[in-house]
Amino acid sequence: MRKDYALGYVAGEQVHTQWMDRVVNLMYRDFPPVLRKYSGAGVLWRARNDLATTFLRETDADKLLMVDTDILFTPEDVDALLDHEEPVVSGVYGTTSSWSGDVTLVVDGCGFVSIGREVIEALEPRPFLPIPTAEGDLTGEDVGFRIRAQQAGFSICIDTEVRVQHVKSIILGIEDTELELEGDIAHRLEGLV
Image 1 (spheres, one colour):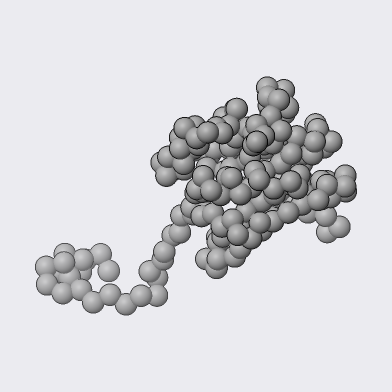
Image 2 (image 1 turned 45 degrees about the horizontal axis):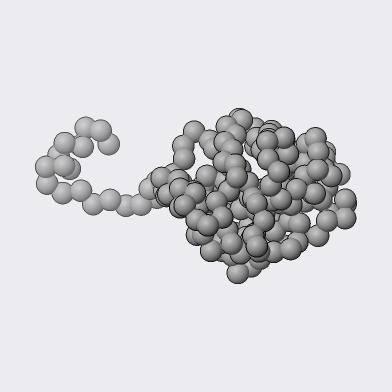
């Protein structure tokens, strides 16, 4: 029988309606989450730590399913993560760099991840705190979490069959594009160019 799980999510200023549709669908399944926790903290690592603390304090659930509000998933994706025995399991999603627009795969992020209660208990009070690097920078909260989890002896699994979608806004520039204007619109724009 499926173990209880809690659903935690970090929301920014906007929540996509497609994401909300997927969460609502989870509520009407045979195994709905025991908690739906919103964390709107302005700093991602603080928001994730808030979710972990709330999960431990307010539920007896075995797993925390953390799903960012820009991730689109299916009920089958959720089932696949929850069916794993490993204490940390994530799916795969794409992202883009803001400066190049290149799409890369995220295989170790926390945007769509199932985390066992025992992992969060072992890493509290702040399992998602960034870690300083040798160069003096800080890792992301997801990298800090995974390093701590591995150092504590927990295995981490990436289910490459679970491929969720990552909603991103892309700004397209037209600086180097030639535009042929004819007729009335060309006349109206003459004084502006």
